[in-house]
Length: 261
Ligand SMILES: [Zn+2]
Image 1 (cartoon, protein in one colour):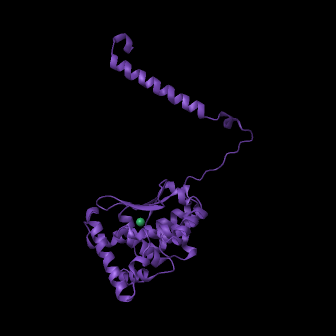
Image 2 (cartoon, protein in one colour):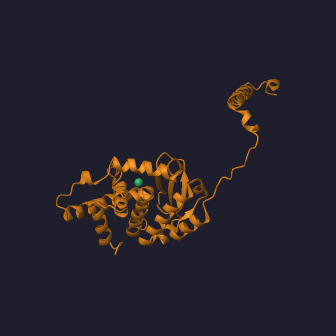
Image 3 (cartoon, protein in one colour):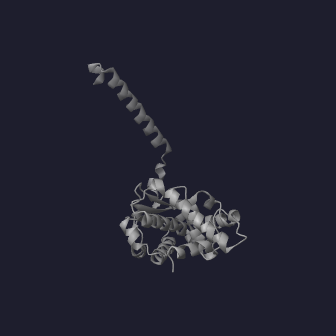
């Protein structure tokens, strides 16, 4: 058609598309193993694409919305983490805050274990776990064990290795709540300054409590990254059974500001 009406440019574009599709077809057919389609006695395997009702209920009680992608996670591992989020949500009175931020928990394919996401105004939040680590219990325990032994993470009771990452992420959400309670219109660009203040308050408490307090050795490598990670790491340490001097200082700080009794 383009040949007939001498539209050179359109003809060129058309030819490029043809080559592109030919290449794709070659790639597709050369890599495809057709024999797989004709295996006898093929059995349909049920793939769970949604989280269990029980896990949805636990997270709902925590004030957290559940994304279907959580169905990809090992459901007993999800249950352990959902229960931890619920326990912490109740302990720190987070349910209303989570609900007002439409906090959703989902499963990603990210290279990091977990994360907390929020928008510029910090009025919506998401918590996520990566399927690369949460596909089964052994993987997460193995990763966390190595992480703690190499001091990348804070000390934690062995029985809590599987809930370390999500306890750390919960710590981020708690610090966001502290920020929004003090500055209801506070946005992301001022948030790090607030976190730096909180960090120095906690370090002051540790210094006063323990005259020989050593900041470098008390904090995990990851906690050194920035003031936000400091809080999340020290919070995880405080909550997971083996608090060190920083974990104790965090506890005192949270009591001082009225978050803990
Ligand atoms: Zn973090």
